[in-house]
Amino acid sequence: MSLVVEALGKRYGDSAVFSNVSLRVAPGEFVAIVGESGVGKSTLLNCMAGLDGWDSGSVHIGGTDLGTLDNDARALLRRKQVGFVFQAFHVLPHLDVAQNVALPLMLLGQQDNARVHSLLAAVGLDGLGARLPQQLSGGQLQRVAIARALVHRPALLLADEPTGNLDPTTAAKVMDALLAQTRAQGAALVLVTHSQAAAARADRVLQLRADGIFE
Ligand SMILES: Nc1ncnc2c1ncn2[C@@H]1O[C@H](COP(=O)(O)OP(=O)(O)OP(=O)(O)O)[C@@H](O)[C@H]1O
Ligand SMILES: [Mg+2]
Image (cartoon, rainbow, N blue to C red; front, side, top):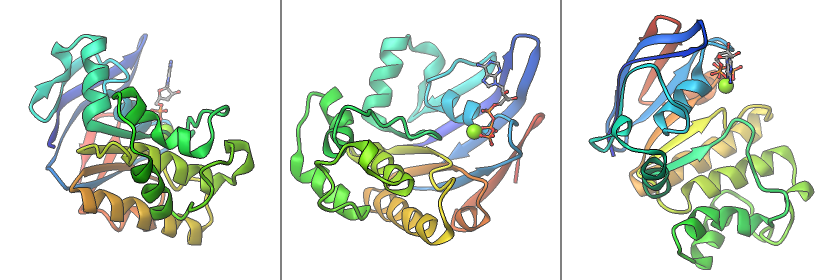
C-alpha cells in the first residue's frame, strides 16, 4: 500500500503548523519521521490517516485521494487499510486486553480469536488477554496498542511514538515486535519517534520542519 503526501499544509486558525510537506512511502517500506516537539508530527500522522483535515495539498492511500472521500468513506478505508498506534495508546479501559486487540476486527464485522491470541503472543503478552488495561504496565499497554493496530492486517501502519516513555530494553523489544509483524505482513510503516535507536532501524529518516520535510 503506497502513501503519497503532496504539498500538504496545515494551520490552526491563524498559525501555520507546517506547509509544503511532500513524501512517498512505498509498499512495505519503513519510514521514520523525526522533528522537534510541537513541529506537527502527530498532526501530520493524523492527516495521513484522514483523522484530521488539512488546508492545502493532498494525501493518497493506495491511489485513493482522501480529499475526495467523506468522513464515512475515510473511516471505512482506515478500518480496512490502516493501523494506527496513538501517542497516548487510546486503549479502552472497560474492555479487557483481548477485546481491545480485537476491536478493529469487530468494526469490520469479523471475529478471529486465534489471530488475537497469536498477536498477543507476538508482542510478548501471552496469557494477559483477560486483564483490564489498568492491570498492565505502560510498556505492556503500548504493546496492546501495537497488537490492536496490526490485528486486521493493515497494509499501512502509522505509529506515533510507540516507544515513548519506555526504558531502552523494553523500547527495543516493542520495536522488535512492531517490525517483525509489519515485515511479516508486508505492511508499510510510518513511525514518528524521538528515539535515535528506533529511527536508526528505518529504511529512511525524514525530518519534519515548519517549511517541509527533509531527508
Ligand atoms: N487542536 C489544536 N488546536 C490548536 N493547536 C493545536 C491543536 N493540536 C495541536 N496544535 C498545535 O499544533 C502544533 C503541532 O502539534 P503536534 O501534536 O502535531 O506536535 P508533535 O510534533 O507531535 O509534538 P510532540 O513531539 O510533542 O508529540 C503544536 O504547536 C500544537 O500546540
Ligand atoms: Mg506528537
